[in-house]
Image 1 (cartoon, helix red, strand yellow):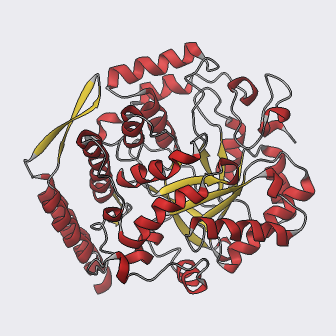
Image 2 (tube, helix red, strand yellow; image 1 turned 90 degrees about the vertical axis):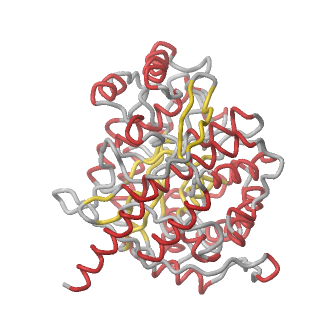
Image 3 (cartoon, one colour; image 1 turned 180 degrees about the vertical axis):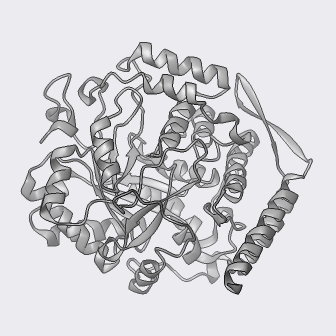
Amino acid sequence: MAKNMLSMQQIFIATFVLVTYNSSTFALNLSMSTSRKHTHAINFNRRDALISASASIMGITSAPSRSLAELPKAETVDLAAIKTAQAKTASVPGIPNTSKSGVLAAVIPSKDPPPLLSIRGGLNRKSLIKIPRVGYSFYKTAPDQAARCTAFALRAGVRHFDVGTLYNSNTEVALSLKKYLDIGIDGVNFSNEKPEVMAVLDSAKMSEDEHSLATISGGILTGVLPAPGGSIGRRGRREGLFISHKLSNNEQSTARIDVRRSVKAQISALGTQYLDMVSIHSPLTDKARRMETYGALLELRDAGFVKSVGVCNYGLGPLREIKESGLDLPSVNQLELSPFNTHASIVSWCKENGIAVSCGAWSKLSGADGPQDQWMIIADIAKKKGMTKAQVLVRWSLQKGYICVPRSAAASKVEKIAIAENSYGGVNIGGKSFALTDEEMKIIDGLNVDWAAGKLGRRDGWGDDDVIAVDWEPTEYC
């Protein structure tokens, strides 16, 4: 009882700190686009002091920052770190929601979802793992931009990175991740960036921090308690990241040792010591390779090299293959999911079986191949709410209970700002003003036209030779 009372007292004090922080009157007008301005309070010295105090209250240990020369070099695969991470997969407080059947409810619609979602993972899928609901995808990101995109996303508060062998950018992503892991965000060089871009990135990060602290459900803090840059150490920063990697079709194999070698090679390339999730990028091989590859990933999970296992673009056929085999079900199924193709039957099956649903990048929906009439309705809602069309899609996916991994390049000012706009903080600036109303959600939900991947022109997990017709869909492959 005393322990519970102390916990509630800690939450009360941390909330008081947040309220005190929010009373700051120092404000900076930020230009988020040519059509609107957001006003957001920024006082970095005050922010760091208050966040540090909150972290101390909630039991997060801080340590003085060290120079790069004082830090130990990261090992390719640190078994001790793997075991430590494995032991801590359920350490973040929170009460999991379960369905009537007792299965973890991994798809929970909400108008104001917290930044983290609980999924099953760890040894024998018995641990709860927290995955940030909004990540950043490297699909179609040029490798020579990947390091910079990673840096901008980190600055904007993104801690979930969606990488893959087919994206051919893990080595470049690792360049920014290493600097961040070794020193913190202060170790990442932004000296040549425009102040207005940096202000937007920092505003998104601050908005995420505030919303994380403010999102309290049932007396349990459900967000991530932020800490000042560089204060929590390399291990703490690594535990705060979620690195999700996708195996290509060429890496699927009936020889499990080959699969394990492929994954370990990517751990080495990324320099992250372990991976939070590894997924099969698509079902477009055959049952023998799919199932043996999936079995190898489960072995890596149970050995601690991987914290969870997922799949991508899986329809009902390959999902049922896994269930009928008696193997653990995947933690996440990532789809090209949008208001224009809601994959209702797949989402329903995943929901019933405790599988979280993730939306892939929407890079082609606004192009010439996209559904123009439906897209104009999205544009109208975006204009009325002072949002971008991409932000409407992020809000829609969040409020549906999905994970989402939007993307943007970083070659221009507009693209850099888009990374911030499409982050969790970016769609929560201004409190709940960006939340879609029930009526708006109903309108968007009514836009489904089953827009097939073949018509969309997306090549994420497959190539041109795989697309046999305009109505071709990877989820209907088997």
